[in-house]
Image (cartoon, rainbow, N blue to C red):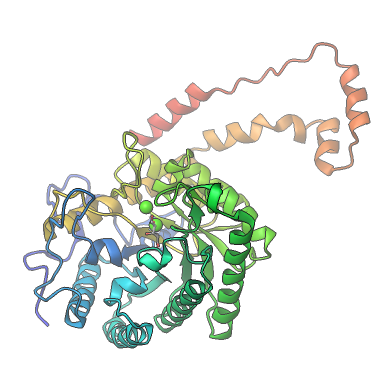
Length: 439
Ligand code: XLS
Ligand code: CA
Ligand code: CA
């Protein structure tokens, strides 16, 4: 098989002063940070769909980038060329994981039996390519949103036949995930939501989604899938209301239906901002609930109200993300670049520049987050902020859970005029952040 990304070398770390566009400036895989190699802190993954399939088509125009890799598109030859391209790409960048939807890896046929046969063939080929490399599958998923049959959802559809079709796709995608040694399985509910309550029974739809997830867990466990199932929350787009609005909503849903032991969150930065949250907020809510599983590493654009899936360049955001990840003790999943080149960045070189940018951004984020933790001022501030609960008798009583409302009321009556004498010190803490980030 001949080289696809000709003239693009293996990307190496050259340090921050390097001007080589095909070198890492900050991602130094063997560098030890807080006792662990950077490459272990940052299990990066390539998103099959954006990197190998998407050519820049948008609502107003067709592809600008040629991802045919010298073959005719929508053929098995093309599917195999994408595998070749993907493995060459990952090897040149030192990326150890990939994520895929069923329909990213083969063209979908009219008959699911034929699609499944193609999936068997291509995953045999992927396995062959994996052999002798240390590249693995991070997670798999079924695309239950593109095909017109899913216009009213998959788990939330009104059609029992479409529901069965979704079940068939999940079953196969789980089998493939197990075959490729995948660590996780994702549910992103792009069409699981509604446009208007004039035609929707929300309770019915949510219960049906839960039933489908339960069946997926039972089947997955029965075929040896030991990894995590993930919900990837997103508030809107394509639907006006999506059921997995944000982490808090998704976690509540999982608990309500007894799915919380098998599921965690796959948090995407751009989805967080669409939900009106920061990326860090979504990570924190997942982490404190023991459900921070994996991350879709991208970023949105604050001027645009949709899911732009940009490669992350914002070091401040990446730092706050890595602060959450370090505090949570790492991820069971990884960092999937669910991101695409901007439409005019349409060459093979640009694909590499994008990943170099993303990997360097998260490497910087890791270094800076470690520096914040080592510096200690922010952690100390937060700890001290609540000291009245840890250092006083009444505070301790409240924390122990043994206090009554009447007791606290009696305590308050003896206080006279009470003020909170502790400043929030936000501006000071922001300046601490800047001094750590830019030192
Ligand atoms: C779309 C989602 C999707 C999931 C996987 O907005 O990000 O790509 O990650 O289906
Ligand atoms: Ca995503
Ligand atoms: Ca997205």
